[in-house]
Length: 266
Length: 266
Image 1 (cartoon, helix red, strand yellow):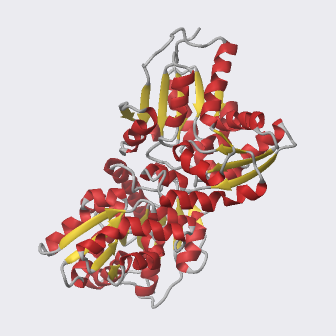
Image 2 (image 1 turned 180 degrees about the horizontal axis):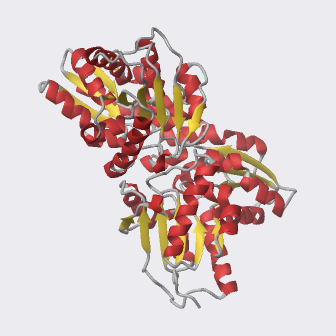
Image 3 (image 1 turned 90 degrees about the vertical axis):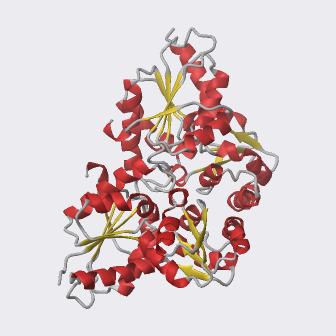
């Protein structure tokens, strides 16, 4: 038993979709969330700079005495998971590995699609892990850089969102995939538009996969909380931009206060 | 006479549209450009964080011995111009003031529109300066947050760009404006789509206004360069993301090499 909190971090506020799944799956676990709203987005940045930023964030979370860390950012999870797990001695879990496992469990015809930010797709991380788990699976990947700003603008179901989804996702029909992985935490906000564009296939939300995987990890290491339920969560951001409040309401259905910290000093 | 370079900075690579106008208007002046590609975009961030970032950047440029500084970023120019000019003892010029002057010279019916990032529009900077110059002018403002990611995706004339421009700009027709200010350095890349959406009105590009104003300022202070022409320009970025090269080719029609520096230490 270990009542210390779980640290969850993201490049911005998209990781709140991961927090939402943790609330559902692990209601007794306290969450400490950090969103790097000052330096968001990570998806168009280099691996070097993302490694530097995520190292600062894990240092910050360790200072908050977390018992485990969840990388809720697809870009960090794709590019820096190996580095961070080697550098820091704490149970750590990324959305990408979790999503890749779910994807392999879900596909029947062994043809899957992955969508994410430019950096996530270029990293090839989903493809690499999926192929390690099952080399027979074919993976088709596509960067969809406009989905994040569309979600943040609140344009999740209008004509622009639909047309954008059609352009980005039209090739998946030709590939005959039966499963699509939402490889960026913002994308669940566009779920209905994405479903409309790809038709009747399975959608994997790695946020949900990560919550399920964390439940197993805590049980296995016997570090789960004694509490049945808690609402003792803490949210930090690196900039008070108003975006946290907006997406928090949209994703968690209520407002939490976010404290602003200077992440550059960690 | 002063052959030292002029410093130009932006939150990212959009400021290259300003450099382009400087090349045209002031071919003898050396440019030192800094683009904060690691922390781009600024448009959705708070005034406090943007002030901190732009102070670091001006410190960096002063270390490069510049004779004047151009704030090529609409967001910084809107929010931090007063702070930066008070803090630093160097001739400084922002795109917003320059654009506001041009706008007042251009409008006939005294009804103008301003488009920009969320932060530029919320600051009300264009409106404030335009009304100081001519209180009879009515200003209609609109944030267009998707224009920057659309330009960076290269979707400047497709159906998504056109539909987005229609949604953002449709109200301007009702206001009867005769002049529209492109209050963000990326927006000139979408010029033809914006023109299509607003019809036959005047478009003010503050990048061009800033270059013309700098020419006057240098002559007035007698610090213009002796050179008739130079190609001795230097480009710095805070992250090597690939975006610099892409937009550099698009805007300047050739590739310059950009050096990566750690801006957080300034």
